[in-house]
Length: 579
Image 1 (cartoon, one colour):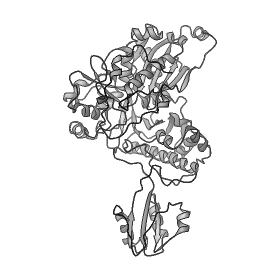
Image 2 (cartoon, rainbow, N blue to C red):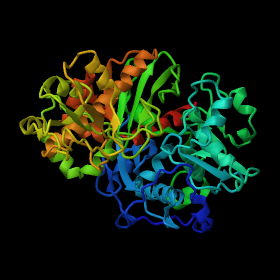
Image 3 (cartoon, rainbow, N blue to C red):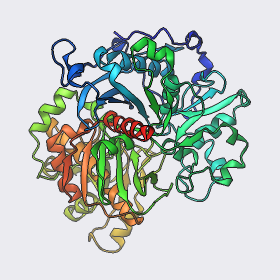
Image 4 (cartoon, rainbow, N blue to C red):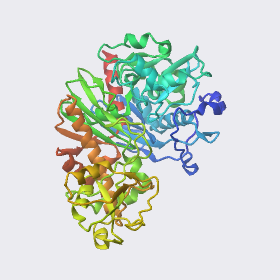
């Protein structure tokens, strides 16, 4: 059971309903009530021995704690200076609801103290440093005196199109902030609200705020998290165009990821048994932490993180930023991590399959055989990368109905299939049943040739008429109509669950391939090898599908969890602090 820390502020229990205003119409999912206080897995000590003998073995050695606050839960990893994991664990976010809205702030806070409680008691005195990663562009507006939120948090995937015109009017063309989901758009959206308390406000990212709970120094961020609010990692400063804006007073100070911020607060040390010299280090984003965990150190090496969403990072000698495609670059010492994050990923799979089904069905997939299905799997409307479009809907293979006056249908069918459109055909007054069955097409009711009473919402396909006029199909067409079918399942839905899963996995792989090709076209170092992090890295059949689609070596990173990358940052901070 998750127990709230005694140091939790009672003010959080008074979090008012008005703090849950949404800047977009997208609904946020609230975890089921049966998930309340659920521990996903017990923390395990990798080298645990009877009693406290491990502490004796590690005499004189220090450990480094990293915590990852991802989209669906929180994890921790405790490592030594050789990178060996001594303990790790995870927690789902506990459910706190206010006015039927998820109170994410209370949930994150509770998860943080639960993870600290999960660290084995006999290992806590060995912890030299702590760092945390959080989801990119998850934004909090807090009181600059108390640190308590003035507004409900803006989550990583939320879009604020109301602020986009303002941001585009001040930022350079195609800048990273010129996206509705950027941190700056979220800040401007809040700033423009009449009820916003501007005088005492401060902007923090998710990782910044969680780290503040540990070190107590408000207003500190890192240059990875600050990128999407407009911070320039090349000049290591906020640009003049941002400094000149009235809301720039809310911006936090920025330091390098892994830099020591200060010692762990005394009340935290006393409560959990950490040493007085334990330091708290600046964090990073979850996708960068996953990249650090994979230890891809050479340009051309890339990491795809297959978690609830799909995020890619490519180590490049060239910096690429282009908001038109949701592409941005994070600084990594003297190189650049180029990439972006798509809204496709594991969250879509969990809409249709349980974890057990995913495992069993995947075993039956032939990864060397291409799937004929072509989807754009999204959990909800809106995409960030490789297409930045808040209105993009999940792509289903389109069902098309048409009526024509000849039985020469093969060329016409080929035309539509070449565009991933699956047609239903009415030839005169009868259906080509054999053809429809052969193509596994869903039947729709059709009017007769002489009385085509199609609904008004059907539209003429100009491109197909152009094809007919050019003589490509060799047909005389009476009328051609199309209609996108709104269904909850990706369509067409094969009878076989194996084929269905195969199609979704391969479609996500094609989105990944499109992303890497886009980076190359924009001038980034060409990808040579892809390492995989996140839960999807465990699926060997998916790895082989991706290897075929990408045409590159694809393998699972030895360390796949972002918490491990955060622990490496803590190690870096401790080593630098001791110099």
